[in-house]
Image (cartoon, rainbow, N blue to C red; front, top):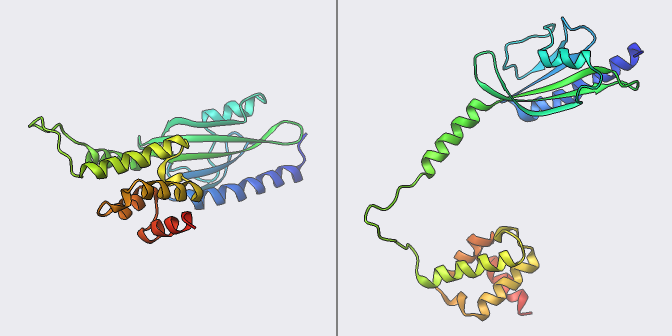
Length: 213
């Protein structure tokens, strides 16, 4: 049987975690702490209120199921849910047990997806392209510039990395290779290389000097 001191400690720790999560994920994520000792009044803490509930309100269906079954999953993550006004949400429920294995508390996170999906739709619209009605393939760069980009991508792929994720040693080797191949003689090559691998123009030449000793 859970002692009152153990219950109080668990709830205190749950509040601490919930408070930190709420502050970090504000304002799009509601964070709730439930005391599972009384199904009619489980909510003891709620932050970034999105559901319209309040301290003293009852458990949800999932909370009731957890209270009734000690073998209920400790964590149910990223399940589809909805807020009281119909907005879509993504929820995660974390059950906390005492030393005897009984559920004492739960921390629940409810992320409002409506705003994020709205942003996603705007980005999709901005990034959307249409086929060129003329059927022509237009190139906005010179052939040597295209070859330079291909070399950089191939070099990064050979190391199973994105160009910007190359190590300093890899970048030094890449710049040395491009210089040896004459690619740094292309107008704007240093700027192009820097943009692709995440370096400034001056750093490109720094790596070159370093590679050549």
